[in-house]
Length: 230
Image 1 (cartoon, rainbow, N blue to C red):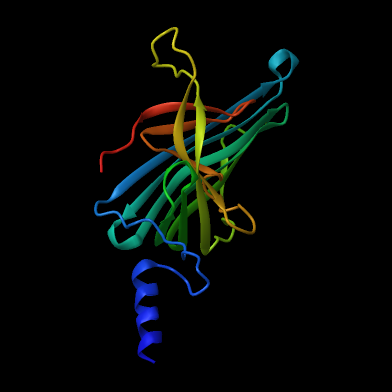
Image 2: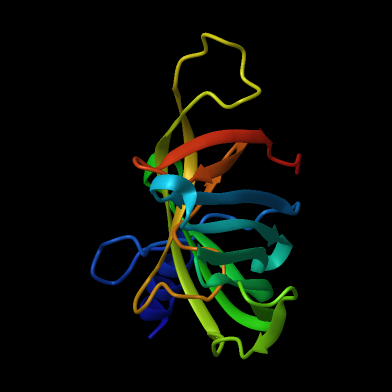
């Protein structure tokens, strides 16, 4: 009996299993709050011949991930998106503005290029405003209508993997700068739909640089500044 107890104590101290294989461990918790930010930008407009008809879409959003001591996590997802159209009959457009506050836990498995960051989140607070604007060509004033926002997702489980992201020179970059590659966390939904009715997934957080996604073809990333110091 004493021999078995000693074996169990050794297994607990070394992390070994009775099958001889080491049990997987999460990386140590951060002692300081780590803040990671990401941005999303999408703007598209199309005009017909003679500019008699036009349509467009736009999205501007940002996500802030806070990895707190003790394995706690907070996410702020804030932005707006919409679409509009102009024809001979008039103008119509729709805009949605959202602010999502997520809270939960985080853990990191492994280290280096093969590390994985796991987030288990629940929606703690939400604000959403969805409006439609219509202005017929026969009327001088617009008519604004408040619409119901889609039902929010209550829980979110994300798996973030390390990746090297190609970054294109931005508008404020020194002329002649070539594209570069930066390390980042690329966060996907672990299972199920990726729809959150907020900023589109995946969320991509540069380890040292805030990355802005420019939605075009192909998808483009640019630096939007440094990440906050821990």
